[in-house]
Length: 304
Ligand SMILES: Nc1nc2c(ncn2[C@@H]2O[C@H](COP(=O)(O)OP(=O)(O)OP(=O)(O)O)[C@@H](O)[C@H]2O)c(=O)[nH]1
Ligand SMILES: [Mg+2]
Image (cartoon, rainbow, N blue to C red; front, side, top):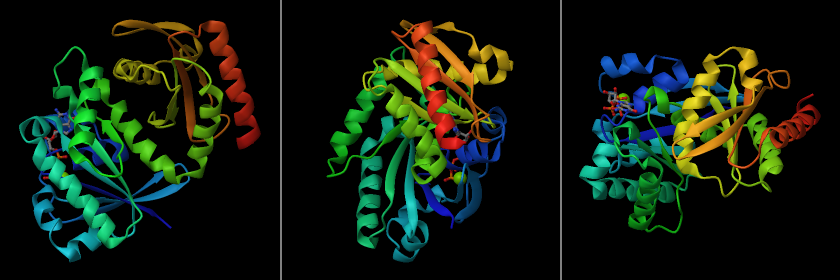
């Protein structure tokens, strides 16, 4: 059975563009130059992700107010969903954050009223428009504001996303993180990596798939997430570079700090996997190689 995931949000926040780029392989730079028409009526599409079949519902922003009032529409949009992704964009958040908070609260009420067992996930999209040197700490501040203003018994995950070429992995990561909650193959992978790095410090591990999408991102608890936005760029670049490049030990400039980077092609363990890449503030070549060997051993156990 397919896993149903619903995308909702105000008009022009980028719902359909995200779907086209991440799940249908369209070129983001083209979609920025020639924007899509507004979505009319609910659109369904089916996608494959690892061992999953995803049925994605893309709703028209124009009818969001109606959706939040009309029970029939609510059932169609939220009935049987595993996850509800509410997408809002940075310009609208700055202009009228209360309006967005009200939408999210209504969605939470509707979900409870309909008794659907769905995760609510928030995307603050178009962060490329946030022209600020300290993007990491700015976003952490916005996260705090959202949680405080929502003031709900549950905290929803918030992903900061953008389809700008340097930041495109933010969207891959967000989407795959949500999908992987429902995929056996990727939850194993995540668990293996989590066990290997949970006792370490200031270290991050990402894995890409054969389509060069990010399927897993796991970090030790103290990893400085403000560096993430620089690292996505490195992952993107390395996906374009020749195969042997990935396993070369490198120093990476991530804004205010230097990180060590080491990768490995892990496609032989699963046809969906491609590169595993480690970034660390403190582990150097030898420790990173050991870590990769450790993960490799576990992958062999699980996937062969
Ligand atoms: N700056 C910036 N613009 C983006 C980004 N993603 C999408 N856009 C632009 O946002 C606009 C709206 O995109 P759509 O995907 O059509 O928005 P939508 O949410 O589907 O809109 P409705 O169908 O009306 O609900 C387009 O002009 C896109 O090029 C992004 O990451 N950064
Ligand atoms: Mg649309």
